[in-house]
Image 1 (tube, rainbow over the protein chains, first blue to last red):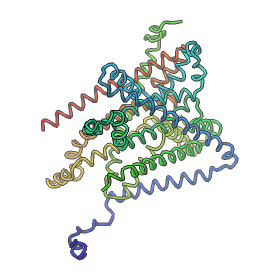
Image 2 (image 1 turned 30 degrees about the horizontal axis):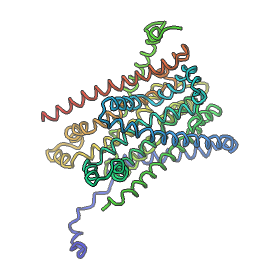
Image 3 (image 1 turned 30 degrees about the vertical axis):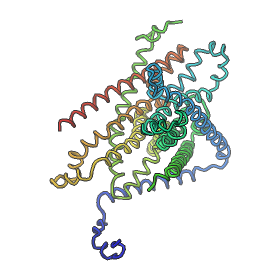
Length: 277
Length: 237
C-alpha cells in the first residue's frame, strides 16, 4: 500500500533503465526486421505487378473450390477420426493385453509412417484388390481419389487423436474417479460429467494442433490427384507457369492456419476462465 | 506372374536393390537436414528469448510463416522459387541458359527450414527451464557470454531438449517422403516406380510403409540409447 502512497519511494528503488544505444543484438534485429519488411514489400509489389485480371477471373473460382475441398476433407476426416479414436483410446488404456497390444500397434503404425505413404497405400494399393472390393461393393468408393484420401486421413488422425484423448483422460487425477465412486456415481456418468470436462481443458490445445496439422497435411492429397487447394495450385502452375500461383496458395494456407490458431487461443481463454486468479 | 519373393529380391529380377537405394537417399536426406535444422532452430530460439524486441519479432515472423505453411508447399516454393530466381539471375548474363535446381538440396533447405521452426520452440522451452542463476554463475566466474552458453547452458539445454528433438527427428523422417513429389528417388518414389512396372501396388507401397516403420523403430532404439547415455552423464556429476 505504501508504494502507492509514495510514488517517489518506488522511483528510487527501481533499477536503472537498460541502456539504449546500439548493442550488437539490436543492430542484427533491426537488419532482420528490415529484411522481412523488404520481403513483404517485394511480395506485394510482385503480386501487384503480376496482376492479370483475366487470369484472376479464370482461376479464382478454382482456388475457391480448392479451399472448399480442403476444408471438407479435413472436417470430415477429423470428425470420423474423433469417433474412431474413442475405442482406440479405450483399447490403449485397457488392461486386457491383447486389446492393448492391438491398439498400440494401430497407433504405432499410423504415427510411425508418413501420411503420404498411407495415402498411396490406399489409393494405388487398394487397386490390387479390385475383384475382392468389387465383390463387396466397395470398389466404387475406393475408385475416387477423394474417398481414398478421406479413408487414409480418418485412420491416421484417429491414431493421433486417440493418443491425445488417452493423455487427457490420464491427466485427470485418480482421486476424481475415486471421489465419484464413493458418491455412488455410475462410471459412464463419471466419465461424462466429471472426467471429460477436466480432460477437455488439457486436450484442447493438442486437438487444435492436430487440426492445424491436418490442414497442412491435407496438401499431400494433391499428389494423388485430388483438387484441393494444393491440387488446384499445381494445376494452375502447370497451365500458366506463373509462380504467383504458389504464392497465393501460401497466403491462403497461412490465413487458414492463423485463423485456426487464434480461434483455439480464444476458446482456451474462454473455457479456462474459472482457473484464472 | 512372379512370386512375391522374386519381386522383392536383389538384382535385375527384383526391386530390392532399387528400394535400398531409395532408403539410402531418404536416410541421407534426413541426416543432412538434421544439423542444418538444429543450427537454425537454435539461433532462432536464442533470438526469441532475447531482450531485444526487434530480434524477437524477426524470429516470430519466421516461425509463424514456416509453421503455418504446409510442408509440401514450402518444398514447392523452394524448388520452383529457387529455380526461377536463379534462372533470372543467370539469364541476366547469359540469355539462353537454363537452370536445373538440385532436388536434394531443395528438399534439404525446405525440410531444414520447417524443422528449424519447430526445433526453435523446443529449444525455447528448454531455455526457459534453465534458471537465471546458471548464467549469473557463469558470468560471476568470469566466463564470457559465449563461453557461458557453450560450457554452462548448452550441456543442460541438450538434456532438456532431447525428448522434443527426438520427436522432431521422427517427424522429419516421415516428411522426407514429400521429396518424392519433386522427383527425388527416395523410398516412396522407388516403390511407386516398382508398383507401376509390376502392377503390384499394394505389395510395394506396403513394403515402403514397413520400411518407414522399421526406420522409426530403429530411431526410437537409437534415441533410447542416446537418452540413457546422456542420463548417465547426469548421474556422474
